[in-house]
Length: 143
Length: 145
Image 1 (cartoon, rainbow over the protein chains, first blue to last red):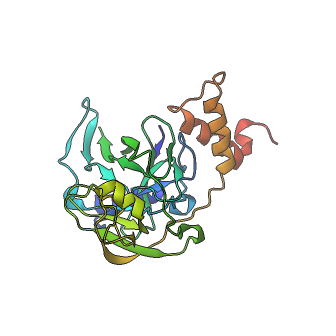
Image 2: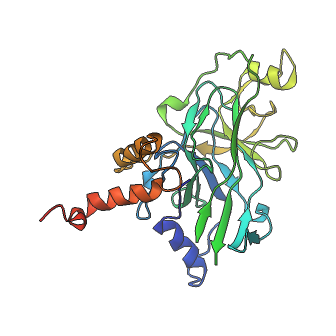
Image 3: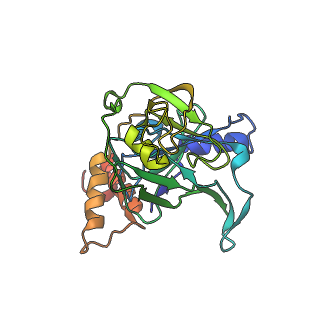
């Protein structure tokens, strides 16, 4: 499974702390992508403009409200600290499906990629009519 | 800092579902009407917050969901996950990106699929980075003067 917090995503995080020069706006967005592959994501120097979002029938990216993230907890075992969002259910697929390679989190305006990740098992998810995809995003800082 | 994923699952609601003739507007990649499902019992989004959707549920989908053969609301604006009418909250447009390394991604995917090459889901990204580095800085490998 590949994952990447590109330069533009880390810039937002460092802009909060320690720089305190920018305050991010909640909610963030969780979107599904069809670009790249099931085992690769963008490189660190790439950005939002290099990712293609799915367009399956009835799809809409879902919001990630600051207040809805879970409590900060240990990243097992003693690797760091993490927060997990409750399971997100995306719209049931209508007439046209898609092959999903993973998900990415973007800023409020959906113009900056905070992070992009494949699914844990390294497999694409082929969505057909009436399928439902559920994603549980986790973010962590390692020691 | 790391960014971690997740769990995913795709589940078919009903294999016997008969698709209705609901117009798919996504082909044009133009902004679509965006709706918010406010049904607290609906699974769309997270359980705590309402979920968003475009388009809407077909008659067949709603009948499958609710058992009602003649649902009151059908089509655009009707939540495909619960069959309730949503609130229009704006527009939605999926982002269309362009990745100049797409050929390298596909090359790595081919390696992952080949059992004779020691590239798998855990080191595929590192392999991609090597290929990108070679392309951007060909002299690194000493192959060019």
